Image (cartoon, rainbow, N blue to C red; front, side):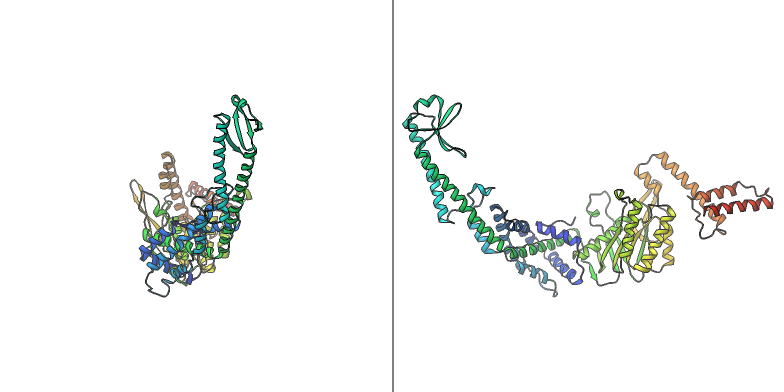
Length: 579
């Protein structure tokens, strides 16, 4: 989505900035100022991108030159690319944005000043290498005429000798009356005269037999031998001279390696800054306010990738407010497919883009300087090393809890779902408390454990948000809007229906759900007064259901006091054994 660069160097630099975003306000603000200038002055941006588009991979070409594997075509590519560097500098100078602050034009001016172009090297390459050199240097013919007198002389000798060959062939045909006589050449036998078998009786006595074929004989003469020696020695000397001239030119290019490297770095950054400006202008990104600390505030935030996908629904922007003093942790509840994961990920991407120095997909954004973005998203295992999905999840969570700081952003999506319900809930609960009390990291925590929303009432810096849905007779409608409050249901069965599960399965699931909801309500109302904090009464706990069944089956009107005490003692003993 971010890759709209026009040079290979810019593309590599984009990857580097994504993997290693800036960590200082000075660098971030300098990049932002350059991007803002190019957003405002679109003509300069378009001109810059148009000129840079013809610049090839200077870094790779330089690597081939240093390894002495560069071909004449590589040198021509280098010269053609370096030839565009002055035009790139001129495009910035002609459309240089006016200074509105000390930073606005500083980065672009510094990059323009770093562009050199090595004009002497470009001139040397273009005057010595032919416009369309052969692929292999062994073929020769890649040095222009007029570069070296001896080379021109040898080439002339070669051309004259080939004319002489044609003259000899014509003369011998006349002398011998053999109309099919031909003078040919191969790498093994050199030049030879070929005469077909029916014409062998016409061969003169001064011909020397060289080879016998099925349908012809091959001969040579003293004159042909001498001419062959001159031609071959001239060709060999030509190749040697061309390679010497090319090696000297390649060494000259290698001597300019530092300057070419500077040009490559400046071109890469200009390309990337223009790329970020292009994205900002094309897709309505805003310039984020990056501060030393404080709140993370996003208004109208969007997911940079999902909003560009050809989906049927329009992307719904959402707001976010995290404050290290008042709203450090935000618990996000809501149904599957509602947009919780999108909300979490778009926040992380906006923070990352802001630290790269680029604009972000939002109406406005205020981003505090952060040291890391920690994420625990999705489900994966590593069975080859004996680690289950849940073990991988806990390992990643351990890294987050041990390394996250008050300057970190933590994104947690459905922590604890890989184990038993109450184990997972307990772990998720404890993690939220740890992040709140110890790490103090800005945290977005998406969960289906609705019990976690209680933390919003017990911890001062924990807030609750939910993804809104609308219930209709036909089912639920995902509104994709994040609002304040807590979701009361997960709508898992509705999502399963949308996924295409058989109707019988959906109807049976609804019956089971109603049964367990009624059982839980009865259990809660009957045992709420006597339940201890350690007792887990859930709709999926077999012990709770057994106790309910025994109480329901008991006829209290006919139980004697002793039988009632015995029943109560048995139930208490069963609870004790299970604990």
